[in-house]
Structures are given as C-alpha cells and as structure tokens.
Image 1 (tube, helix red, strand yellow):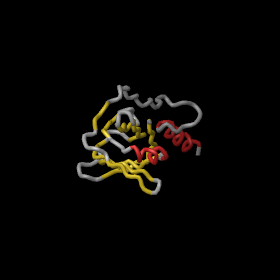
Image 2 (tube, helix red, strand yellow):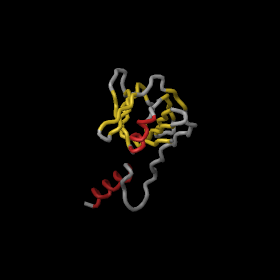
Image 3 (tube, helix red, strand yellow):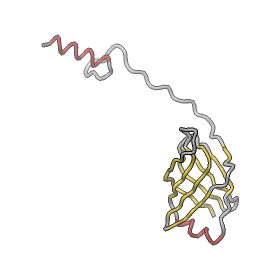
Amino acid sequence: MSKIIRILTDFLHKIGLGFGAKSESSARPMPVEPQTDPKRGIIHKDPLLAFEDGKLVMVVEHHFENVPSWVEWDKDRQIVTITQMNGDLDEARLEIKEDCIGRLEMARNLLLVSLDVSNDNDERIMHSVPVLIRT
C-alpha cells in the first residue's frame, strides 16, 4: 500500500500538485509581455449614436484590436475616443446637437456595437462600457 501512495505522491509532484517536500522541478512563471506605448487609431467612418428609453447605443464600423474599456466624448473637440483594455485609443468625429447633450449627460453606460475582429465577415460584437461626457 505504501508503494502505491509513494507512486501517486511522486506523480502529483511531477505535475505540480504535490504536497509536502518540493519536487526537483518547479513550474516556471509565464513570461511577461513587454509593455508598449498606447497606439492612437482613427475611425474613418462616422459612428452612429442612438438614445432611446434611457439606453444609449453607438454603432462603429471599426475593428478594435483589443476589448473596448470605455468611451469618452469631448464637446469642445467634437471627438469620441474609445479606449481599449491595453490602453490603445481610437478616435472619430462625432458632432452632437446642443439640445441632445443634456440627455447624453444622463447616460452612464452605452452599448458599443463594432465589427468583430475574430472573423473576416461583417459580424458584429457588442460591449457594455462606461461613457464619459466632457462638456
């Protein structure tokens, strides 16, 4: 019986699940990806913005290389900036009429619909992201 326990214990140590004494070889940490400066991209087609029943939706004909993290709109510049998880930024012109800005300021999140980068067809992907309005 002790021979079976020893064999099982050795096996658990080899796969990194052993208890007690450390095995001769230990798991190495995953290499860290080198950090790069954020990239600035341009969204060439104007985004479409819709506000209905307190919900805000933005449709963008753009492939994001990373997952969108939040959206910012700057009133002075009339630019929408979409920041991704890795820090990359993509910007597009988005002029909003003065009488619509008040409703826009009430929104905290928006549904961002964009082209899915994982395939070559026109499938869309949707993210719920926070929105910041700079007035």
